[in-house]
Image (cartoon, rainbow, N blue to C red; front, side):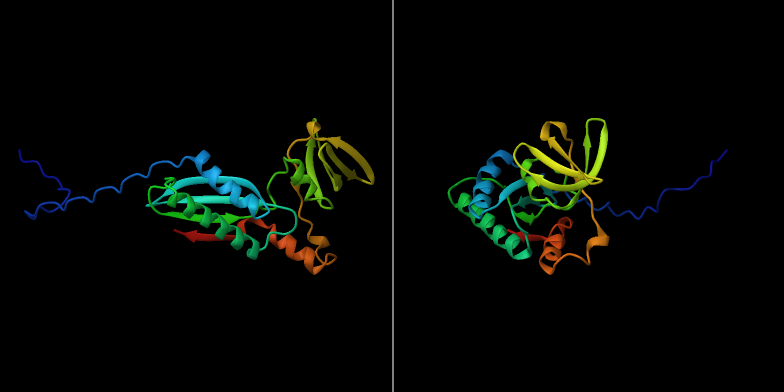
Length: 205
C-alpha cells in the first residue's frame, strides 16, 4: 500500500547555500588591568570611579564607566571625563598595553537617583533629601540632615535619629515631586543630572 505524506520542501536539485560562519568570539577584558588605566584618569579629572564594566557586544567591547563627585555632573563634565578616559586608553595602547582585541565603545555616565547609598560619600552628597533606609528590622523614611564618615542624622516625624553606618542597610533617595516648585534653578539642574543614565556620553573607538 502506498503511503501519502507531505514533503518538508521542494527539491530543486540545487545545493543548499552555505551557512555563514559565526563571528569570532571576543576574548574577555581584564577589568583589573582596565581599572588601572581608567581610574587614574577619572581621579585626575577630580572625580571618583564608581563602577566599571566591560563586555563583548557583537564585534566590539562595550565599556561602561560610572563616575561620581561633589556637585552636579552635567553633560559637559561627563564629556570632559570621557575624553580623558579615551586619551588614557589610547596612551596605554601606544605603550603596548593590550586591553581590547579590536574596537570598543565607551559609555560614561553619572549614577542614577535610584543608586543605593552604601558609602559615606553617597550619604554626604544627598544631605537635605528624603531617604528610605532599613535600620535593624525597621524601615525608616526621613530627611537626611547630616552625614560624616561615622554615620548620619535622619529626621523622622520631627525627631532626629543619629545612626552609625554599621546600623544601616542601603539607603534610597525618594523623589519628591511636591517640592519641585520650591527648589532653585541650580538645584533643578542637579536634580535632572541625577535622574538615571540620561546624562551619559558614548564614544566609539
